[in-house]
Amino acid sequence: MRIKNICGVGVKSASLAIAAGLAMAGAAWASEAHGHGGIDAAKLNDLLWRTVNFLIFAAILFKLAAKPLKEFFANRKRDISQELQDLETQKIAVQKALKEAKSQLAAVAAEREQIIQQYLAEGEAEKAKIIEKAEQSAQRLKDMALMTIEAETKKAAADLKREIVETAVALSEQLIKEKIVAEDQQRLVDDYLIKVVEAH
Image (cartoon, rainbow, N blue to C red):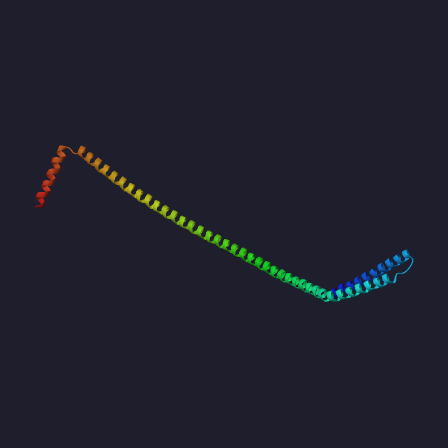
């Protein structure tokens, strides 16, 4: 439709150009005739032949140029339409790629958040294990300390008892030695001998 309009405009422009040429030629002829006071037939004939030749040349030129012009504009229109379709296709492809990229980014972000949460959970579990082990170690140390204290206390008590007994025995022996005199010793010896004789 646009090509027909262009061609129509071209025909109108050519017709106007021809009409303008004829008008200018007529004006020139009239001016020349008026200036010389008469009409020169040779000049008029030459002007007419020039005009006819121009019209024929313009018609041939228009005839030869009309088809290539139509093809040129048709090809140009087709190329522009194809370029627009290609651009639209590229636009759709870019939008699709952008959407996929956004989806992938969202998936990566979700996966990253999941990994972070997993690491945090593992860290908390490891922390709980470390605390539990530390508490168990502390309890074992506490139990060992209590056992050591108890054993040391029993040992100290036993040592103290032994010391007291030894001291008491030593004191008793000393008291006995101080109280027993020589006569008592002789009497004890005599009593012992009598008991031995009677036994035999």
